[in-house]
Length: 99
Image (cartoon, rainbow, N blue to C red):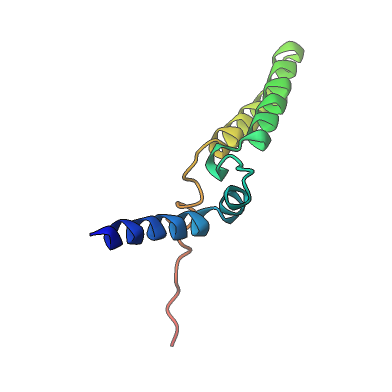
């Protein structure tokens, strides 16, 4: 049965390399990096910008700035989702009949 454990480990290694090759390479070199689904720098920056726009819209009583801030906050929330890449093609474009 030792072969089955080695086989499972190689499957896990190949799946990790396929899912996040940069993390896998960094792990091989001894300098691991956080997996892709836990890197949220752009999301935090967008959320900070959204809160700034939303706050300035509230202070200036401008509806367009408030709406823009809410839209940007929604976009930042979408970036925090770790499984957003897997759902990218959930709703494919419609196919038209061709003859």
